[in-house]
Structure formats: C-alpha cells, structure tokens
Length: 243
Image 1 (cartoon, rainbow, N blue to C red):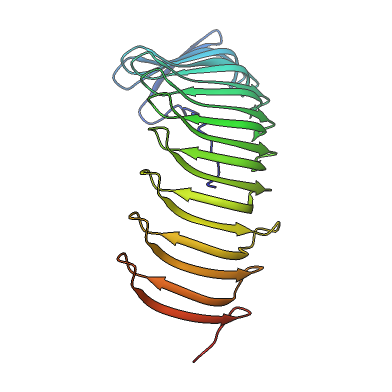
Image 2 (cartoon, rainbow, N blue to C red):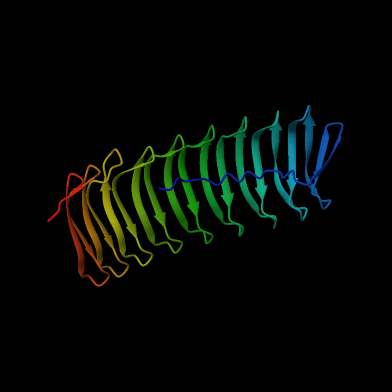
C-alpha cells in the first residue's frame, strides 16, 4: 500500500514579509496586511507555553504548547471556516499519542496512534460522506497485518496483507462496479508468487501470468477487451523462452 500517510497538518508560520512585536516575552507576529498571524510566549528566542496562530480572516488556525521551541502536549488545528481540522499529541516535537483529522464538512477523515513520530496500531480513513475508506495496521511506522479499502459508495476496493510494509499472501482488487480487477499472491518476503490474473472492467480477462518466488515462470497470456488472445510468452526462471 501506499504508505498510509498520514496527514500531520503541521502548519508552518511563514516568515516572508511578516512583522513581529515582543513585549516582556509576549510575542505577536502579524501578516504583512496587519492581521495577527500568531502570538505566544518567547524566552531567549525559544517559544514557551501556549501559542495560537490565526488565519487571515481572524479565525484560529492552530493552538498548542511549546517547551524550548518544541511542540508538547495537545495541538488543535482548524480550517478557515472554523471547523476543526486535526487534533494531535506531541512529545519533545515528536508526534506521540492519538491523532485525529476531519474533512472540511466536519466528517472524520482519519484516526491513528503515534509512538515517537511513527504510526503504531490501527489506522482508519473515511470519505467525506462518512463511509470507511481504509483500515490498516501499522507497527513502528510500517504496514503490518491486514489492509482493506473501500470506494466511497461502500463497494469493496481491495484486500491484502503486509509484513514490514511488504505485501504478503493473497491480494484482491475490485472495480467500483464490483467486478474483480486483479488477484494474486506474494511470498512472505514480498515477491510475487503463483498466478496473477487481471481483468477488464467488463469482466474479460486482460492477462494471466505466473511467477515463482519473484521470477517470471511458465506461460503468460494477454487478451484484448473483447476476449481475443493477442500475445503469448513463455518464461523459464525469469528468462523469456524463444520459440
């Protein structure tokens, strides 16, 4: 899978053209148009305690605490319309603990757990309509275990398993119309193994190929969308056998 990423929403403060005022450790930074951009406490040029940043329209962009210029504790982020965008937890500037994010319409977008800046445990993603989109298991920042995906109408999109972010075992992929798109198998080391079949959206076979521990093996057949065989190849231990 694509690396479940993860949507950290770290809104960096732009320095270009900004103005700042520091009074007895209370620092306020302004947009070049005059609106407050961020404010908080600063000691010896290091951010300390609560800091709040703002969108140009005056609504909050983020709020959280620093210790010696490092994020610590809970941080909350918002869209320009005031809807909460994300909530995360930090330890010494590393993401640590529960992370949640939302779509701009207020529907939950993702939920996961982090340990020392790496995802660990169940990861969930949702579509804007609330339909579950992805469910996966992460360990130490890498995919480990089963992963399932759905289209936003609830139709199954894919299933598969991973070990240390390498695909393993049987996988299946479907079109949104429910027709099987592709199926195959991987070894425990992430190598394709056995027969892989891929289909056109109309259900006709596009190709049937075989691997043995990652090497092309045996007869490979290819078809057009009408079901006519268009090419045949033969492999032995990864090498094309000439007729």
